[in-house]
Length: 111
Image (cartoon, rainbow, N blue to C red; front, top):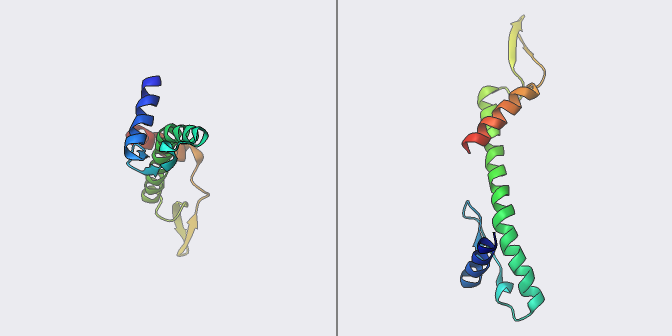
């Protein structure tokens, strides 16, 4: 763990920025500051960005994937078409939670 922290901070000092797993960059100019408080804060931000930013990117990807899956499974927004009565569409209640959970777990496995 300490090696990862050191490597992240050293890399940030050389490049002036850190990257998340998906390549999103965060520039931290204070990483080379002569002020020890500003530099320490930038070091913490460098490590937190790589960890928390990467987690946020993965969650965003999962959310997009879930939304696409739900749209494909239920093209009439979040309502499913049951049957027609006198040429009127009858819609069921919102998609049950277990279906959303199934899609969520599937996306988390393959994202």
